[in-house]
Length: 189
Image (cartoon, rainbow, N blue to C red):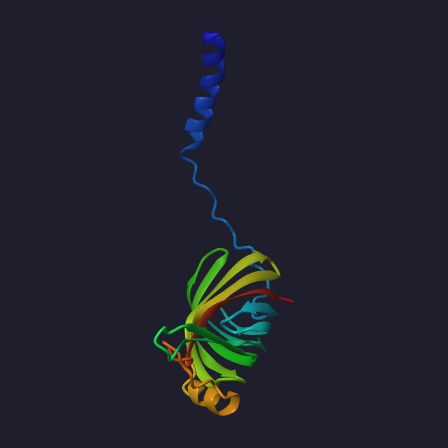
């Protein structure tokens, strides 16, 4: 039995030992030869809503245009001694125009900084900053993850004026500050 184990183990040790010095070949990017200057797809989340997205650009700078259904959620405390939690939801639509500066690019992953303009039908005009990540799933498809913080300066005024925001509550954080993430699929024709 010992002889059998030695006969099997010695060739295995020799093969493993000889391959330890061989370097692995670099992994080519899935999209290495694919077109990545124009893409479109669908996105869902609270950063830019539920809708469509279109992207154009090069290796270092990209432009993204997204739009769709984007509800506004406002949490507040009642102006009573118990400060009970109150919640208001408003149906809205949002348009987003973001500029992305690519900060890191790997074989299948690209990470960039997002800066842009936002318009929400409930809380008005705003601006945002965040992070975008593209992960290649294949030569013509990528997973898009984007998120950050947006500021809508006239949010409270618009809620009071256009939607009769209740006066019996006060939000602990102004509705002018919105944040979240979106997940999408981008197709490259």
